[in-house]
Image 1 (cartoon, helix red, strand yellow):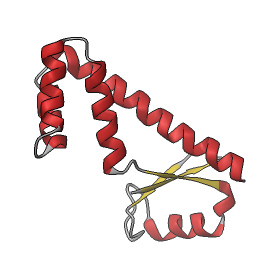
Image 2 (image 1 turned 90 degrees about the horizontal axis):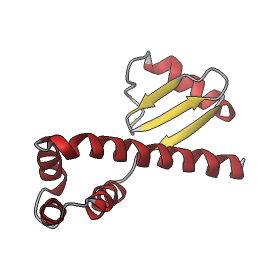
Image 3 (image 1 turned 90 degrees about the vertical axis):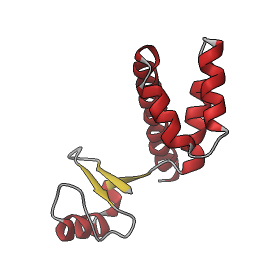
Length: 122
């Protein structure tokens, strides 16, 4: 997935990596606009699986309850860590919202760092 932010309008366009599909908009005209006016757009990359895994691990390490922390860390070291982490978090009334808030903050910081990097380069 590749996302673009139109600097002047604030509109977001999201493409699959092959750029043949666009979510929620007419693909050909938006793709052409991004290509023709690339200086008017900031592009964002999604986190790769290693970065996403590290977000989960960092959250787990910050959990105060020793039993829950140990459970989450065991999940992360077992097969299917993404699926099983989500299942465990979704079952926890106390930690589900904490996880969602934590993940949102980390994703916000990730996108923000991409903006800063692109501004420094441009």
